[in-house]
Image (cartoon, rainbow, N blue to C red; front, side, top):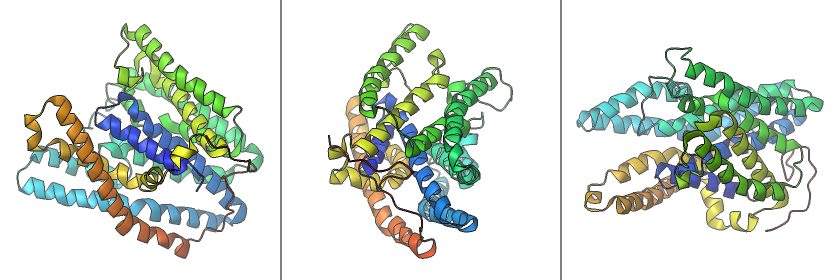
Length: 387
């Protein structure tokens, strides 16, 4: 694993967790960081496999390894949640919420939850709401290997740039469709619908793919400029569009972004920032002293489980009857601490007893024969700087 990337996964999860515990409205962007990271890592792996394997083995090994990495925990959680929902329904505890889970779970089982989340049939689920992003990831894994295989090496850059451009184009089209109610089943809010659909995030994966193969000039300098510019741009456009700066903890990009047409250009800006961040970490060692700390690496290693389990555990922790005697701020803090510790514990146990034993089967049944360079892709390694 490239130094710093496990730590970045931990950062992405922490951002999402802080958003879901109402501490950081801007934290939803952690999902975008996950998407760009996926484009970066998966593209490098696919190109290496393409160069070292025949076509049949290319698909079998890639999908075999992905299946063992993703499916066991995902479906374990879904069926565990199904058991809990049946029990709660039988005990007449929040039966309407449990019925909603039964209605939605087929979409999660088939990795179509993101499409459900863009329609008027969607309702927030204590068990499933966060699974829209896992559906987007899986749909990327389905189509991207074929595109990489069919694209000649000399045209990789064109493919990646096309994906980067396609993202905002899709978002323009989707904005028109939602705002004009082209289809009766689409949500009233274009910002919500665009956030959920996979077409909206093509440029995140395309940017990740681009930086896996090609250089970004002065990545460190770009990182610091963008870090300062993003909240300035966010607050300024928020004020121009609404006459109000919005929540300070949203940095002008509170979820769902839509004011000032942010649902079109805001994703491009944020995705590019995360591409610069990943490049600076992977290629130039930015923040590696922090990102390589043992606890950060460990959180990154179990980040898949952290993401899968955290939403329901936040819900459970927030329903503790002892919280009623506390102020809102105290209850929020206790909920965040308890749910975070519970999520880490559950994800750690899950990783040890479910994920890791199955991950060991990847090399047994689908051995990776692709090259293992320091950094995925065709860029030659450079000395790594430390921060």
